[in-house]
Length: 93
View 1 (cartoon, rainbow, N blue to C red):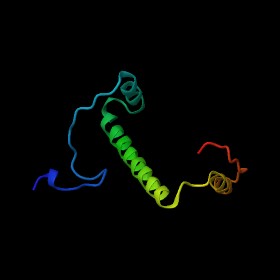
View 2 (cartoon, rainbow, N blue to C red):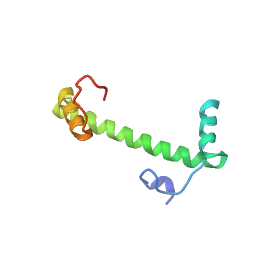
View 3 (cartoon, helix red, strand yellow):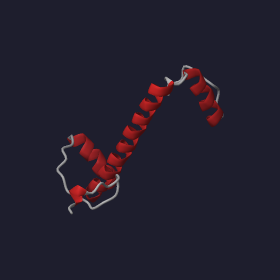
View 4 (cartoon, rainbow, N blue to C red):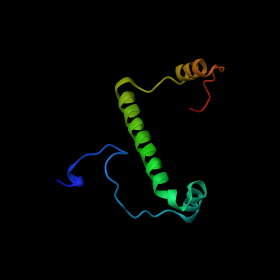
C-alpha cells in the first residue's frame, strides 16, 4: 500500500516534495518573515489555512442554500453584542 492509497487530513501524513512557483515579491516577503529554511513550513501552514477557509465557504454556501442568506441587520446586531460595539447594519462583514 502506498501513501497515494491512503487519505490523510490536512497537516497529517508523510511529507512530499513538489515544485511551487511564486512571484519574486511573495517569496521575498515569506523569506523576510521566516528565513530561507522556513519557507516550506510557512507554505504548509498557509495551505492548511486556505483549506479551512475553503471548507468554511462550502459550509456557508450549503447553509445559505437550505436556509437562505443571513439577514445583514441580524448579523450586525449579533456582531455588536459579541464585540460590545454599536450595531451598524452598513458595516463590512
